[in-house]
Amino acid sequence: MTGSHSFDKALDLQPVDDTRMRGQTHPDWANMVGPFGGITAATLLHAVELRPDRIGEPLALTVNFAAPIADGEFDIALKPARTNRTNQHWIAELSQDGDIKTTATMVFGIRRDTWSDDESRMPTVTGPEGLEVSGPPLPWVSQYDMRFVENPFPAEDAEPSESSRTTLWVRDANERGIDFAALAAMSDIFYPRVFLRRGGFFPAGTISLTTYFHANGQELESIGGDYVLGSAHANRFSDGYFDQSAHVWARDGALLASTHQIVYFKG
Figure 1 (cartoon, one colour):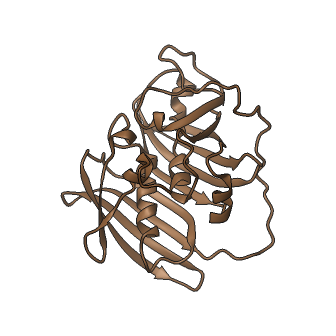
Figure 2 (cartoon, rainbow, N blue to C red; figure 1 turned 135 degrees about the horizontal axis):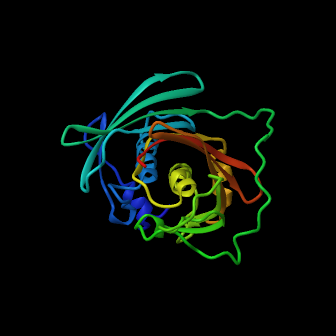
């Protein structure tokens, strides 16, 4: 991928020592408070990808957002917790001035040629062509070409919805190809489901996000800058928290990633 793209600039990391890398937030990926969670997840994943002792490809990523990340430099400390014959476990901590802001665990693995089946079926929807590009006026949103099939970002005076499901086509606005870091970021593009159910904006923020990578690197490379289809829904809202599940498919129906997160909200 080209280092001139804002996504690659946001993922730019320089080694500090044998266990730490240093990066900096990028204004193109700003959210309402701090950077877009997806770019943080992508950066943590990329930090391990850069390690010379890393084996295999990403299988699982869990990111815990402990505190808002301020604009500016940050450090990522990495530790390989265990390496087995076919998989490797990593622990990461993102900090600013010694204050931990985000923690993560990652599993990388060597993929083998085995029997395969896909029980998750991509919904039958209209293609992205002809759908309008939409989304809230946030810097990170403008980095994507989002075309909603159902339930786009609600207006401030929207009516409550009985369904929490949103489905949309999405690709990089400049058609940057998809790799594992880009897929990690796309797994967090879904706005909080409480906005849709309650019909408006409420304070909300992801606390923990887990993404499972089902596609291999060759599959992702074959997609290029094409659209992928994402669909997200919530399972339960209670006591100030809700969870939401999502899937991301290639245009041909292959499941690329599944993701789950727990979200804090008020209202």
